[in-house]
Image 1 (spheres, rainbow, N blue to C red):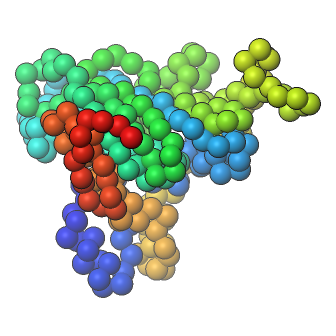
Image 2 (tube, helix red, strand yellow):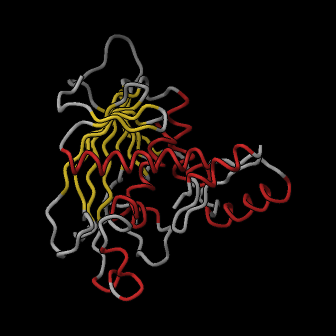
Length: 272
């Protein structure tokens, strides 16, 4: 996890802070996310309106035993800080800062204090809105690890098996799913295209030769030895932590929570 005081000391010293993760490289080094980001930034999807996301799988009971007992704790453990933080990092990379969160926790099945999942509504600074479903108690292929095959401890569910993506990003001219990177849109032609017209399906190219963890190590060496600017800064990591805290506050309070910079502000349950 990120140490806020350490990041502040780095900033004041005029040095670079590189965000490191124990389970996932920076999204800027991940081939599926690179292609998705290029698709969004190119404008081919039009104005981005919404995003739908899911991270769901079933963790073993041994994950919470022995040296993993800290994961049972409602403060240090829980699926929000352990797993959702990565999804929020990815979503902010793709769509910009999250400024509002509403959340409700899911039913607990293990008897521990730590949360096991929940449902969230997100609003981004750009005006994009989104929903996200989170659980670590259910068998599911709809998670980053199973869909990308990046984590060797989680078997990959291939695109040919039809699981689809863990994100759906919707724009005024088309939508894509991630990481299978299928684009759905209408044929360009005369007149307005809408629901009575047939959708066109296209496959977006991905550079699968990129090895994210290898690239992360190379980049870390470049940052430390050569002074290269980090592709994902400590501030970006801290921002994801702040959104996680906002999710937890929303789950406990039942209120809408706004984020102003790196500060959390509770609001009423009324959405603007």
